Length: 362
Image 1 (cartoon, one colour):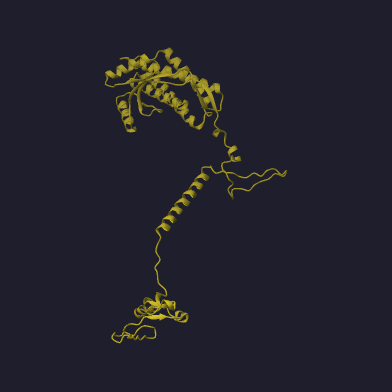
Image 2: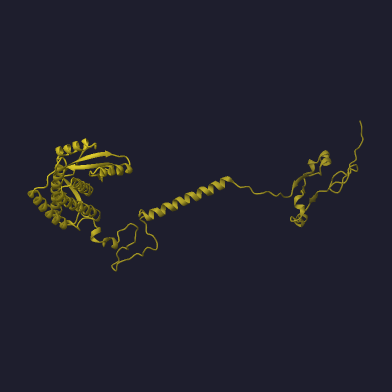
C-alpha cells in the first residue's frame, strides 16, 4: 500500500497558492458586517462583483472543493436590477380610466335629461312648515312654480272638431326620390304655364291641378296630355273629424273650416271647368256675387279663429288665409282680363291651401 502524502498550501482566504500562475486581479470579499457598511456603492467598484463568504458545516468539507474554490459558497452580496414595465398594469389603468369616464358621462347626461331623481346639493335647501310638516326637497324633474306660471299661449288645449266631407282629385305630375327632382318638376310645369304644387305631407309628389269633381279632373288631365304633359289622378280625402290645438269657441272653428271647404269647391270648379274650354268664358254675375259673399263670410270666420290656435297651427292658418285671398284675387283679375294663366294661378293657390289644411289636421 502506498502511504504517500499530499501537501497543500493555502493563502489567507483558504485558497491554495500556485506559484506557477501569474498575478491576477483580486476580487474583493466582504467577510463581516463592518466591511459591508464601509463599502461605498457610489464609486466605480459598483460594477465589480463583490462576494461574501457563507460558511458551511464542517462536515460538508471536501478537499477537492476546497481546492477549486474557497471552502464556502460564493454568492453576490447585492445586485442591481432595472425595473420592468408590466403591460397588464398599463392595460388595467387604461380600462379603468375608460370605465370611469363612461360612468361620469352617464351621470352628467342623466342630470341634463332629468332622469336622476335624487337631491342635488346646492340647488336648494329643504323647507319645513311651522306645523312640523315634511320637508320639501328639491328634485330634478320636479314641476316648479315657474312651470305652473307659463303663458297661456304655451299651454296646449286640444278640441275635437267635425269636418265637412272633403275629397280632392289632384293631377299628379310624378313621384320623385330626391328634392332636386321635385324642384326640377315644379320648374318644368311653371315654364309650361301650368300650376305646380308640392305635397307637404308626401313631399315626393308634385301636382299640376286639382278639382273636387273627378270627371272634371279627368277632362283637364286629358287636355294636358294632348299638350305633352302626362298626368295621373291622385285622390286625397281629409278626415271627418280631427283634434286641433285650439282654445277658443269650437263652433267658430267648425264654421271656419266648413266655409273654407265650400269656398275651395267654388274656386276649383270655376277654374278647372274653364281650363278645359278652348275659349273660356267670364264668370256670370251670379257666380261673381256668390263668390264675393262666400269670401266675405269666410273672412269674418277667419278673424274669429285667429289668435286661438297654437303657434304651430297658427302658421298653417296664415298660409291658408293667404292662399284663399290670392285665389279670389286671381279669379277677379281673370274676370277682367280673361287670361288663362290667371286660372292656373287660381289652381296653384287652391292646391297651396289644401296642403296647408292637410298639415294642420293630420
